[in-house]
Image 1 (spheres, helix red, strand yellow):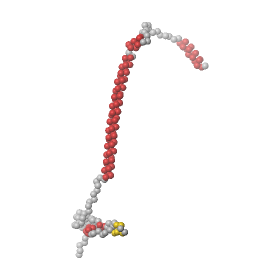
Image 2: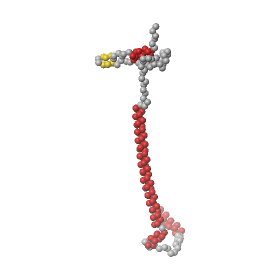
Image 3: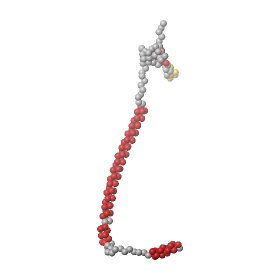
Image 4: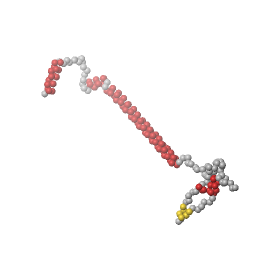
Length: 174
């Protein structure tokens, strides 16, 4: 009795057979459909439990492991774009802050200069409004003299004020 081959051995034998030529019809090459025999397996079929899955079949080529990209090019471009945007925002922020600091410095200098001018004007007002200066200007330029007598209080007759008010009211009614 001939020993039976497992499914993995059968498929491995089929894979090692030469490929038939593709069909040609009027100069056009028609690619053939892949068949199950074209596939190379790493081990026995899952139904066959007599052969351990980790043991490779002798004479059978192993499939290459698929390489998976760890980072896609789109993600790299997206990351570079994000870094560029963040760096532009950061640099523009630094420029804006330095411009504002310059403007603050100019405004502080202007404020300090205006305060100095204000202090000078206060000193000038105090000097010009001193009693000695006002008396000197009044006597020299205007010819005024200091009073020699005490001022007298004037008294107004209340009857005369009432009479004037009645006359004004009568005139306004007309």
